[in-house]
Length: 167
Image (cartoon, rainbow, N blue to C red; front, side):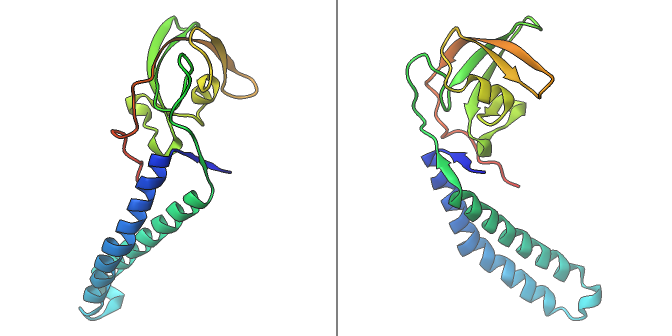
């Protein structure tokens, strides 16, 4: 599976990897050494906590590097009146007679609590690349899908204000 990322996502991930390798790795290794020097390792909680933090950092580095290796670059720009990356989209849910506004982002920036949905989500997949005024079916699973209408597209957004999710 490919990770769909923007060029800015790639840049930010590379910066996080560099920070974790250069700054955090050294700090965490020092913390392990310091905790080890405190004596008996069988009852030394600080040692196990420091070792776990060091291993979590290394795991995050491997995860991010693997993400970059499998990255598929997605363009941030789109045609006028077409849903693209970083666009705010007003959707009308016909079944519920409700309107919602979502920002379409890459999977590493999704934040559903703040209405930032991934292009990999059911709604994101359904509306990405579609035109203003178009009625599309959102496929939730093989048994259920529902219609939405694209009522408005705001293409002025960027991903500069969106944080990459940290695990």
